[in-house]
Length: 154
Image 1: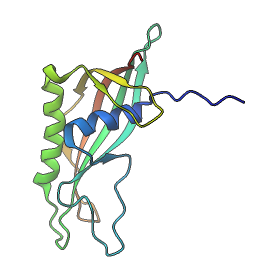
Image 2: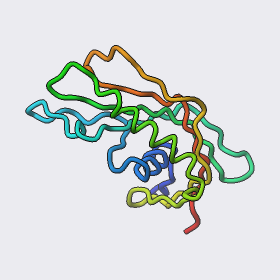
Image 3: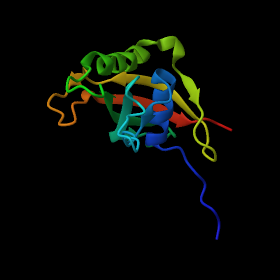
């Protein structure tokens, strides 16, 4: 039995690209609180991604992945959500889409995966505040971030 070849996935590419924008605080889920209830991401906020659609090209190995992006912030010890901190993360993502000199760019994926190359990035709508979170987290949602990407040649 042969070991399957690992391929880049929209989730891996989105996480790797967003890490170039906001640093190492991106994943598919929020980190769990520590044993003492502390949030390791409270100081700087956190970004989560969800693949919401996209279109692989029929004739060339080009992918256009649609990603839902949520920007989170927390203010431990307070019931007042830090809206500005979450908004700053969302604005950083938007600004990165306008930074045309930084796109295209090669991304390094986890060990065993090929490199990927993002060719374009844009949002399909303005980020919006998501109120009434029962945990008192501030959350801004970007309804659609579209990344056009391909696996980079070895």
